[in-house]
Length: 129
View (spheres, rainbow, N blue to C red):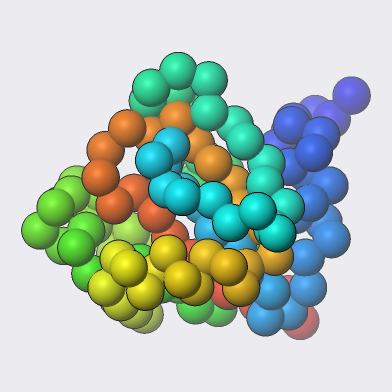
């Protein structure tokens, strides 16, 4: 059994298969999910697990060189916006409708149980060397 890190087998494996420049969407429970993208669905109950906990776990294991969020998070979910700004320097913003279109290009989607608006971010994988 793993001692630390992400214990969810499908999620741990999916993260291990990512490469440089691959993109991952970490999203709330209301985000529309494209049918042609691998999804690890962690949603259990509204708010469980929360976006913040899941993103912190992902960032502890993944090298990230860029990130994109919906510009609506700046006014529609200020707590989430502050959380993202604190963890993702150089975060860029696009309209929420564009973020939903960009979701079709990601390699992996991680769905949380988050039940607040605009708690979504696309992470671009970096490289550890």
